[in-house]
Figure (cartoon, rainbow, N blue to C red):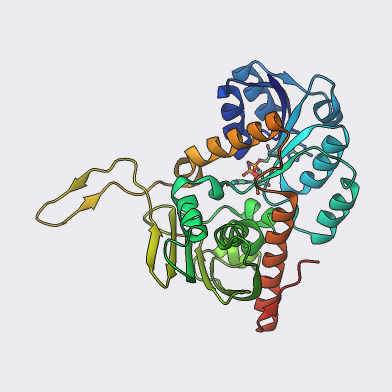
Length: 334
Ligand SMILES: NC(=O)c1ccc[n+]([C@@H]2O[C@H](COP(=O)([O-])OP(=O)(O)OC[C@H]3O[C@@H](n4cnc5c(N)ncnc54)[C@H](O)[C@@H]3O)[C@@H](O)[C@H]2O)c1
């Protein structure tokens, strides 16, 4: 049995608490959050203890592993303290918004040997990962284009936008990682980005983007297109397409049921697609956690590493550089 500390009892922390609690080999031992109401609620629900300090949750001898789902600025400190105490770490994306903080953390944890996995859940979606496998197995021949559409149902509020660190680092970072995952050992070497403010007044207030498009290029010449929106009236739009010399494959949107309705007004009308990430990637979040537990059990390398988290941030930073300069940016992962 692995005893877990959960850092953060907010939106995604609540989901992770239920996943840890449901796992037969895991026990939710401690929860830590600066919000007393959130932490009380979760501790009561799962009969966990409330840690009196971050140190207790991160370093207690009763703890084997830590799941970090707290606000992004806390991640590097919690990764560093937890891994130096010998605990296996699962940390939500992004590691941080600032590459200097990521690199300081990377230096600090160099001597530790615990697994550190980053929460890029889309890699664990069975349809997206089927495309990745198909590419590795040459099922569509030589990959030539990769197209990722990722649109949220509605923009977040002003408070979230103020803290999120910008659309590219908060949201597109998932797509940069998914592109890296599907491309396998073919690294992305160039990035260009466009962003617009078309939807949300709050987005304008924080001078962020709510609409964005990116073109990237891999070392072997694959062209990658990513498009993002903060508002899709029909739900959480998540599609991936790979196109190659022997065909094309699509990982399509999913609906809660597979029922189709035919009427005078519609042909093949279906349920609305899933509303947002918790519903759309419900199974992927579980599979991601199961994978992390197997990593701890087998003392193996995590399937989504600290370096993966760092590389996705490097691509997001390059996208900002491209947006600001109007130029195509060459990527260095050093
Ligand atoms: N993988 C995904 O699909 C996904 C989805 C949503 C969020 N996230 C990531 O998860 C993290 C949390 O996001 P969220 O949407 O749950 O945010 P949230 O604001 O709902 O929750 C964050 C929680 O962190 C707590 N917190 C803040 N400072 C703290 C501190 N010093 N110590 C302990 N707790 C502290 C807050 O009180 C809050 O309860 C972010 O890094 C975000 O990028 C990932």
